[in-house]
Length: 190
Image 1 (cartoon, helix red, strand yellow):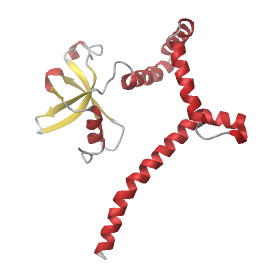
Image 2 (cartoon, helix red, strand yellow; image 1 turned 180 degrees about the vertical axis):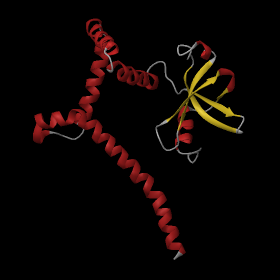
Image 3 (cartoon, one colour; image 1 turned 120 degrees about the vertical axis):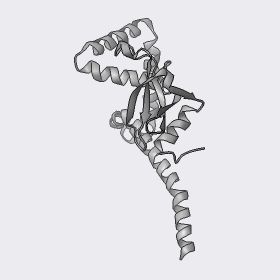
Image 4 (tube, one colour; image 1 turned 90 degrees about the vertical axis):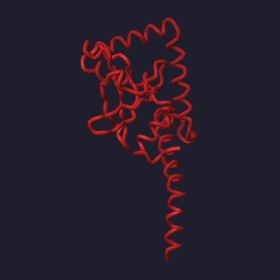
């Protein structure tokens, strides 16, 4: 009986990560395909092939990226950007989304510096990511501080601490490895 239980647990440990990864990829594919796919299904009807919505979405995003670099269409995008940044309530939501996307994928990427911060009174340490190196715009007394984001385990949520620059230690760790370690509660290590 113990051998059967051991085989069952080994089977579970083998198949569960595979099934969950395939399921997540399937769901992500379905979501991305549905962005424009639902419109295309109505137009193409029986000729619709799964994946056309995803391909069309990627082509459209690339085309819009190209348009944003052109003189006339770039000015139109800038005008829309300024309009959204000046509209009450919308500006708050828009600026948070825009800044987050630019920090993850833009040229000024955040989460690229992994740091260690210490809580000496508790004899604890925590790994985090520098998200902003200049927080003086919040207050003059924060001129020598940086913003450090510390994700919560098994979640996307986290905490942002304003830490004095001399109290952080930059770690020589890939951000992806640090994030994997933090989000898994330390379970996922090399």
